[in-house]
Length: 447
Image 1 (tube, rainbow, N blue to C red):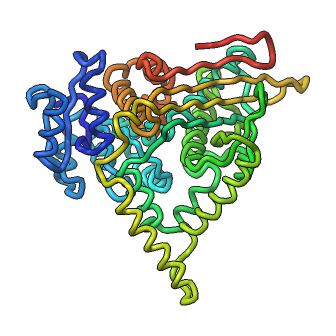
Image 2: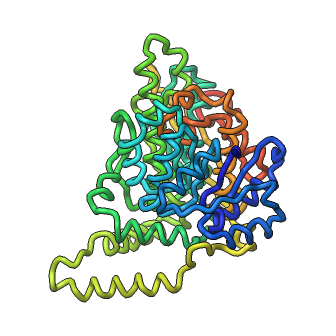
Image 3: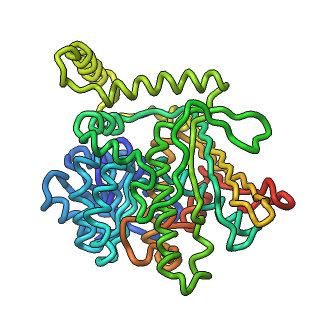
């Protein structure tokens, strides 16, 4: 029995996670194992990290074999699953974790799949005490954290009854790259997932247990309010995933507030309020650049999602699209491949969030600016840190996890880990998170 098992440990992200866990400052406080389909590939990973099987057990597992999955899941307290596309391979792993009362984290960004496992397994997870947390990487930890810390800062100055009106995150990515596994996931969503499921996740609060105030529809040009200088941008392609996760956090907090109305003081610090709205965008050099980007992106998305070979007159267009995908499979990285070591170290992410409170009786608002900074490739290096710290929170910090996680279920990073994860990421040395008041009283920072 180990504390943590990493599924897909021979893949690109799996290797990064194994390396991070093997060199973690708390390494003496936990045990972990690695699981993958190939014995020789596992041995290569262990050798590359100077690890022995005595220290780090290796498990052979074919994710398509349910017996293999159950056998490996039973060997750990927490499962880190890096095997995607999760639409194809993730459900059996979550089922096994829920059935055996194990905790689970992953790196999915597939909202259609998350919606399915919530429907099928959320109640069972509550009954078994299994904490299941999808989206524990770049999608969607930073977005979830920023809404969470902004809410805390608002309440620290305005009081526990202060609620959020609008929370906006502006992303600036440096050196972001793509691995073979991620590219495979994108193609799966385009080719295998029913279009009705893809359309359903575009609705506000698709993952939330309760309906809230709808956010504005995507638009061609975004701006960041209360900035020292103009900040322009366009719709961020991961905004669907991130917004749905943030809205699920809001929904779980709101549900807890409604169920505990007799003890409002216990849940009020977490509630974002009934008017909460969230949006995000990617920062671009100018308003014109952002508008052109939006037009081109929308055209490409429409071509990839909408064209179907239902009419003979579209045959040529479909053939061209299939040819492009065939070429892309040969040009893009294959499974197990990803950014170079230089790319991993040179990347970065800075996300600036502006959150405004609902107006008080005098019509006054409080405005908070929160910033998430990460050093290293955002999608892989930083994601490996984020998911590892999520798993370690479950193993080492169970006694101080937020109340919303104690009953189990399909949760979000903040409803599962809250301040515990914020502090763990700060201590990692690769992430800075800060929040300060801009309007409402004297400007002050919170850490």
